[in-house]
Structures are given as C-alpha cells and as structure tokens.
Length: 275
Image (cartoon, rainbow, N blue to C red):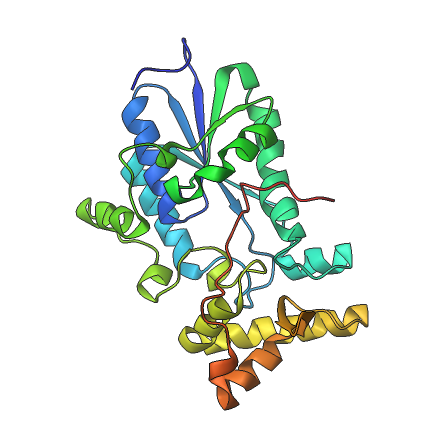
C-alpha cells in the first residue's frame, strides 16, 4: 500500500493491550518500517490494587507486544481508577455514558498527542476491525485535526481468533483473558459498557473480581443515594436498574433469566463522551 503522506511521519497507535491494537501496530509497521512509531498505552489502573483496572497480564503483554512490533511503548496515566472518576463526576458509568473512557483513556492520550506531536506530521491509529467499520467516520471526526485510521478495517480482513493465531505464530503469548473466554482485554474483564452476559462470564471465570465490582457498585449507590446500576433490564417495556448483586443472585437461583447474549462492548478510543 502506498504512503498517504510524504516525508517523515510519526505513527501513533492507540495501544489498549488488546489483540486488535497489536495487529494494528503490526500492519502499520509493515507499511512504514523506517518511520517513527509509538505505541501509546493509557493505563486505567489507579493507585490502589483491588482488581480494578487492567488485568495483571496486560502489562506483560504490552511489553512483549512492543518488542514484537519493534516500536517504543509510551504509557500515560491519570492516576485515578474508574470508581474514583465516577465519584468525582457523581455519576455511575454505564453503556450510555462511560466517563471513565474520557477521563482515563481519551484525555491522557490527547494531552500526550498535543505535547509531543503535530497534526501535520503525525497519524493516529485505532485498533478496531472490519466488524466495526461503521465507527470509522466518528473516529476520523473525533481525532481532528490529526488524521486517524483503522488498518484492521481494511483487507485482508481478520477475525479476532485469526489475530490471536497470528500472534501465537510469532511466539507472542496473547493476553490471558482471551484464553479465559473474554472477548476483550480491557478493564480486567469487566467494563461499564458490558452487558449481562459479559458480567455473568466475569462471575463464572473470576468470582473474586466480580465481587469487587459488585462491592464498588454498591458503594456508588450509597454514595449517590440513588437507585443506579451499571446494567439495566426491560420488563414489559419498563427499563429498570439491575445491580450486580441482583445478577449474582439471579445466577444462583434463576440463571435462565440472565440475557447471556447481552455482551455489550468497549469504545474507549472510538467514541467521544458527552461531558
């Protein structure tokens, strides 16, 4: 593929620690082998270690992945965890509005771009694939005045399992959450954008981590004094809160009532949050 711009450029990959961002970095490196490339990792881990934020294996993976790609890894960090952000905002994140994405991912990355790069000599890359091609227009708009691209939305088209096999063929061990059945490697297997099925899987695969999420959600409900929750459910057209405690009890007594197909999704570097 021909270069889109002339001259020496910086190529900045928004590196989430997921397999898609690694595959994106590999494609960028193949196309621009002699130009400067940075893997920019926004770490959402706070100062406390409570199974909140990144999975422990993510840090191993990003180091290995950076070495495999042959690019410099830069880490930026706000310092708060998602629950501290929710308290500061006085709003519990959910699928509609996840201020954690804006505060802990987007803002630190944008600040780094503004300090260390210039739009006319830099290109930003995001790790979505062809199944999310409908997001490309918003990505391009949100990153202006920088040019933003998503190489994995282009041919040859790869599925996530194919990306994982690609990594393994190069001797790179993928993040452990994939082998545990998670669809992404963000926020330790949880995410306020996730659905009932995702949190059921977290409960099954990592009950101690689910317990922390359940506790933190309960603390936020007490802090706000409101009937709020990460999850929602609709009964006869009436949308109401479904707490993680509710989900756990339902899993124990009436698992058939859990919508296992409700997985949700992550959009940390894709969608700008309304603030």
